[in-house]
Length: 536
Picture 1 (spheres, one colour):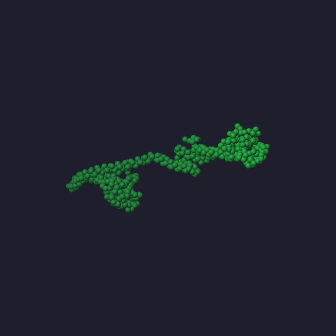
Picture 2 (picture 1 turned 90 degrees about the horizontal axis):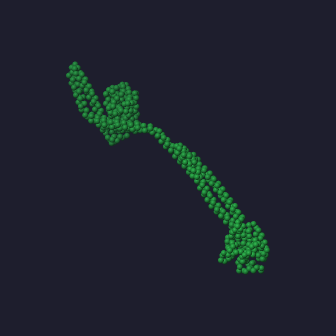
Picture 3 (picture 1 turned 30 degrees about the vertical axis):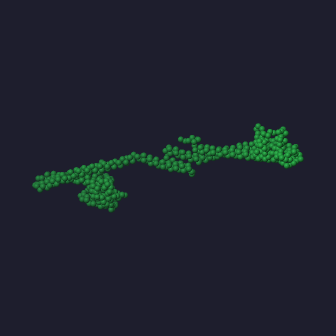
């Protein structure tokens, strides 16, 4: 919402500056006019005083000779000068002896009048008055104001020693010269200057306010509008909006900070938008990870439960199976010795079948014992390439019987890890046997050893028919077998899985197809023996 006109910062600043200017110019005008009036009054007073002295000096000689007509002429002549309203001379009794107004001659004035009050208001008549106390301003008629100056006529030696005068030497004042001058010209000057000063002050105030308003609009209002526009754009969703202010100052700094803020907001918004758009994909990825973790936990729980059951069942079945196998072989040998012309061949064949099945059951029991045997293991530093070589030696006769070609590729020699070498051999043999059984004669078995950062990686690749998609999730579960000839117990890969997990490693099918399968084993190179002991 845009602010109203009166609430805009530029308007407020202009009004404040205008108010300050008006106050300052009002004070300045008042002071200037007061000084002007004071100076003009002082100048007029000084002129009146000078005029009074001129009259006194001009009539002095005529007064000494008592030439009254000359005195009249002089006073009348000076009284006709512009600005002179009236000239009067009072004698010591207060009677008007001379005046430019002939009707006032020989009249006695009141001592309480403005002309006499200055001196007669005192206990004793003063002989000397300051010049400012000789001046008085009063209305001459209803409309006009005049300036009056009382100039005492002192009794000098020429006055009381003259033959034609009757003045006593002990009298200080012989009379008073009263000069009244017009203040009309002074008032006109004051009024004219007052109008001029006020007009100039108003014009100056308007000009300064206009220029101040112009500068405020350029330097404040326009940048603020740009910043306000930027805020509106941000609020409307245009987070990449930038304010363009080509200046230096606080508002430019605010604009720069705003631009930085909009950049950060736009980046954050894009990240949130991207995260929101890919949320479903990330949820699916996390669900898949959780599913795999759950499957691993389920597998471990199954293995743990099955391990306990296997240990119990294996111990209970091992002795009876051993007895069946031993006695079936013994009876078959005795019947073979007693047989004439093959009369016991059918029985011997049945006994051989019992021996074979008992042997197979014994192998299952042996696998169960191996599967359930969970000890801490003997961890030590071993060369992984030597462990692989020993495992390959142990299954060499299987390679020869099935005419399988072995290919070794060790990309890292002397790759030492902390492990239980016998258990690693057991896991490798189980995987290698499975690979051999999955291939036909003349195919190739490849074993690759390499190092990736802090892990040792073993890849075992066969050229068998591959693992079907439906079997792939279950190949590491106990007793799950894809062999149809009842040769497998389904414990080989489960045992290998448990051993690799015990070593804090991972075992997985790297890839599988009709052209073959690759198992990937990852083992950490760091020291894990203490961690395994803590877990067990």
